Length: 263
Ligand code: PEP
Ligand code: MN
Image 1: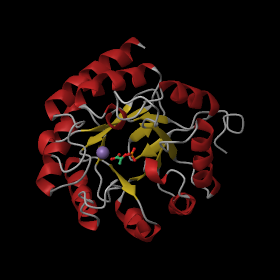
Image 2: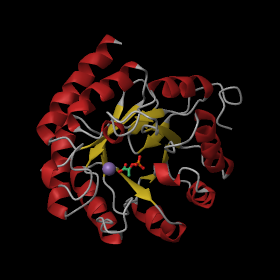
Image 3: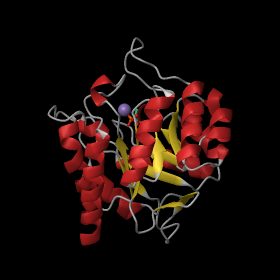
Image 4: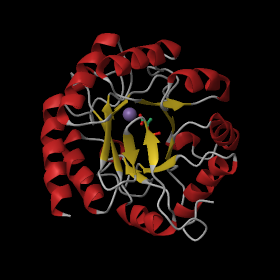
């Protein structure tokens, strides 16, 4: 179902008036984690002004250590929904547990499956049944084929609104947090009709690298970008090193616009 031999025309995933997979690059931006209403409001206004069309933020956070900040949960979803409505941006946020599916169905515009749940097959099936647009991250140890097979679980439940997200894979290289697999992204584009997103923030791991990785992904044909932006990144409760300031995000958006024009 994900193959472009089965479906020849490219899929466009529509979220309100945002169209992912049309010719215009769609940018989702916001903090790694929702920390407070004020934080989300500040960032949402700034990223919207800079040209982002979707608001991202984690409410349920998949943290490596159980002692790290785990996210605000349901309260985080409430904040995102409120701010999203206020500023007029659809919201993207990660689901970790099938038991939360009703909250996501009722309040979230695009459901993210994180890299760590990329092969959680019961979660993939459940999200397929919800019928909402899905942003499916590639697992950190998954091949392109495994990533497409994960999408297959969602499509099989009758939900065709899937965007694939390359977010870096684990390799021996330690100068970046993960290795953004531009080659894999390009290969996936040749195999599937689904739109492709790139997340330059998580593979970068450091904000100094985010602009270049984002631009590389755009040049390689990404349909969408997912970028972490925080009003005071150094004080962030998660991923403090890689989040952009609103000012830096605005500069990046201008660079993306110029590059997209040249392509
Ligand atoms: C995120 O987008 O905040 C996130 C946790 O991403 P990933 O699942 O790619 O690590
Ligand atoms: Mn993050």
